[in-house]
Image (tube, rainbow, N blue to C red):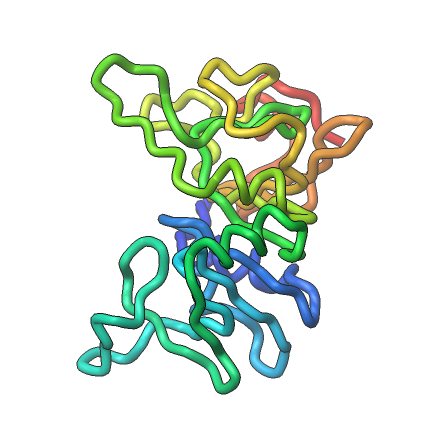
Length: 210
């Protein structure tokens, strides 16, 4: 099978963001989405460090050290964009003003539980950040992650073994192998990479798919 690259994952997710949506891109893989938003579609990007109207990454040599996203990566600002205090940014997140957020994850359960701040390992450094506020405050949560960990174990599981960030919050998972939707009836397969069939994917996950 031909796994999707990280840019292909970001491009696939970007196509599903609706017109006019206000979207937060979490630290890590989700930041790649900014460079793949469809031309001509109005999507307003929010960053939790106090930025609305964020644009794609700048061209090499045009970086501004004072214009960064929450992951400290250089970004651009679209016409009409604005800056504000981080407390106001979190008020937007907690107040239900974001249509969508895109987060990374260590695990997601079949019910949409999200674990993305701590693996529970003794030497791991917990990193909550604004993930809990986003997971509970955004109207919809998409997760972007590899479907299997480095040992080949599924990160999409029946029950999360890591501490939860939020319960029953994830709507969709955009991975290197497939796009999956979490529904009351179970996991629904929306798309998969070239060369991967449903039975093979079910075997990798050990979970039923619709």
